[in-house]
Every structure is written in C-alpha cells, then in structure tokens.
Image (cartoon, rainbow, N blue to C red; front, side):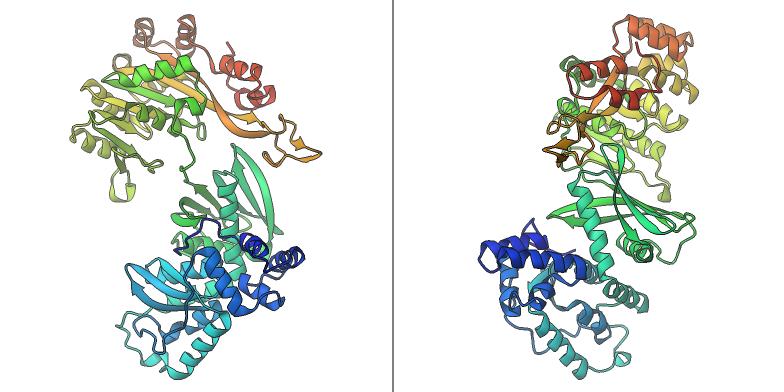
Length: 549
C-alpha cells in the first residue's frame, strides 16, 4: 500500500543511478550488490555500512531517484491519534514514523523505501495507502528513542482512541513483520519475478528438507529456486497475512485474495492454501491481464476463422460456446469475442467467477456462493435487466444451462464456456446435463474447441541455447509465448437433425468434417509446417485427444 512515483523501484536500479551520477564506482556498485544479497541488510544500511555514501547524502539521492519527497525534519510533537507508544517496537525495528493523515493517505517518514513489507503492514493497519517521505535512518532511530522516553506507558492510553493498532493481535502481526524482514523481501521478490517472467501461477511447495518455488509459464511448471525448510513458517504466515487468511488455521484449506503493487502496477492474486504431509502448500494465481491482447488475431486464429467468429457474434440470438480443459485460454477467447460485439447500441452483461478482465461499457457481475449468488440466480437477475448480449463465465450445471437456453430462445446472444475436449462434445455434454436435444439444435449457433501450444522461441529457434548459453528469452526451454489450435463446429440443418436423433459425439464430429470443419490436429499441423511450433509440442498437448482427421 505504498505510493512511489517511479516504476523502477529496484535496489539494483538505484545503484545504477548512483553510478551514472558519479557517486559510486563500478567496483563499489558490485560490492553493494553482493553485500545486499548475502547479508540481508536493508538497502540504505548496505551503502552506509560499506562506507560508500554518507547517510544524509544517501537519503537525498533516494529522494531524487524515486521521486519521493525528502523530509527536512520531524515534528517536535507527534500526532497522538496516529503514534501509539505501544507500536514503537514495530516502528523502531522498521525505521518508520507515521506523521499525519492527508487527502486519504498516511504520510510517513521512511528510511528504506525499498522495504515494501513494512510500509504495507503500516498501511494495512491504518487502512490507508502510505505516502512516504525519505528521512535518514539514524535520525529516525533517535527520534523514536526520544519519544519512548517521553511518552506515557501504553497501559494509560484510552482504549477508545483511534491508534495505529486496534488490539494485541494486530500488534503481534506487526511484530511478525518486523522479525521476518528477510521473509517479507523473499515473498515480494518471488511475486515480482513471477510477474516479470509472465507466469500465471506461483507454487510454494514444502518438501522434507526444503521449500520448492515453482512458476507455471506457458502452461509448464518451472522450478525457480529453493528456500530453506526453516523459512516455510515465515513464508506461510506472510502470504496468509497479505491475503487476509486465518494464520492460526493449518488443518483446513483456505482461499483468499491479495492486491500488491509491482513496478507501479496493481496486481491481483488469488490464493489457495492446502495442508500437506510436509506443511501447507500455496498456489498464487496471478490475475494480471494488463498485458493480454483481447484480439482473435493476437490469439492465433486464422483469418477465415476470425471472419466466421465475427459473423457468429453478430447474430442477435443463440449460444456460442468455447470449449476446452482448464488453462486452454477459453476465457481470453470469450472476451475477445465479446469485444468484437461491443458498441453503444447494445447492452452487455457478464456473469463471472471471478471477473478476469475489466471492460468499459460492460456491466460485470461476480457470483458469490457465500451470499447465495450462484450462476443461476445471477443469470435470472440479468435477464430482468434488458440485456442484448450475456457472457457467462461457465455453464456448470443443468440449471445454468437451462437459463442460458431460455435466454437464447427469448432473443439474447449468450457467450459461455464448457469443459469438453472437442467441439462436438459440447452438444453431447449439454444432453448429459439434461437439456433436450431439440433445444440444443434450436439455440446453439456454434461450439469452438481450442488448446494452447507453446511457440518456438524466436531468439534461439527452439534450441534453448543462444551464443553458447541458455537463451535469455525462453530461459532454455526452447519455447516462448503460446498460440491457439482450434476447431469450429457451426450448427447446420444436417447437424441439427443428427442432434435431434441422438447422434453420438463421434457421429457429430464425422458429419462436421464432411461439411468442411477442420480439426485441431490439422490446424496444429499447419502451425508446425509454418515453424510456429514443434511436432513435439503438438504431441504433448494433443497426444490423447484422438481423431487426427
């Protein structure tokens, strides 16, 4: 919850700045990097302890580099409604001084603006973003020491006053932050690296003698580093506090969310915690969609397929389904279709769990089972809001399928996803849910099945090496980025007749092929022929899909 003006907040970036300014020599910069990595000292302490920069000079350079104001002096009399003597232990440990509330912000003096964990903790307990002011570390230490000697004991304070800490539990949490500064830095660094690497998930996995950190990048798991077994408790507590979970509960699974700032951008993460034999395992799903292009062309659809899909979303009523397993890009394709239909002349609603993309001009509703707002109830409410187009995150059961069918029959266009492996499988899956075949043939306009294939790295050509070392673009994987392979089944009179007669998935698929539909395998073959992906990657993704026609 800290507010900093520059997107590059790294300590290494600051050292480069000092070198460019002539403050540090290249050799001194290397010493500082090594000391910071091995000694776990705060950023400002490293430079002062090594005798590279004087403390007052360092504070002014930090101010100039980060665009954060330099504080000339601290007030003689602190704001009693903010500075609780009971919190001095935390403030002294982290060299922070909360000064005032101003324009919805908490103004605070800080010695190390790179230590986001302590500022986040401070802001969390005041429920305000922190607006930092740079001030020398030793001066903050002296100031807080003076306050400790002057202030009355904490026991004499009025419990009804609004202080920085609400109760003893909050104080314990702040103490945890102070004691676990290396853990705070570790968790923040892992999240930042995951965002920088384009990962979709962060896995924190306790093993018998270490903690394994893995990222899912381009659909594949990749081990990033290992932490000591002793760090697990601190990492676990840190993630739970950030996502507002119960830190005392270690026996049951928990789900939460957090929002953090990475390089000036707010990033949402969905957190899942599950107990395991060696301790709690965590998965952090990164919900950063800022870099995703909502474009059928950018996804990898061919021009003829784009034309067909654009035609489908211009139809005033019916259902269009995007099919595939988890992680096949269904939601991104769904939103890309929706974007094709956006305009001032229609009303668009979405019903999702969770909302993954924010779209201007679209009314978006997130389901919440905790308050009995499931997909079916949300859909019924949306139908009373005079919609033209409805995006449903997923058709999960018979009730939501029936409402989607009813919406299509009453003149609405419904876009949704279904967990089936093939386009033809969507028709039989709806029947398995209890939908009458004649309703399916009357409302389904098309089903699209897709998978994501890793693209061969453009830098190393798929070899994983460049100039005799691991490729810096793909990190030695040989692949960078993903594209889509797909099949489109469009409802025709012949297919409708087969559905009404109870045709099997295989029969429907063969009929679609006879009418000119191209399979995912054939599209994938074309990608291999064009050098976009490899035969091995196609085999990995489509090996068990069958029907290579």
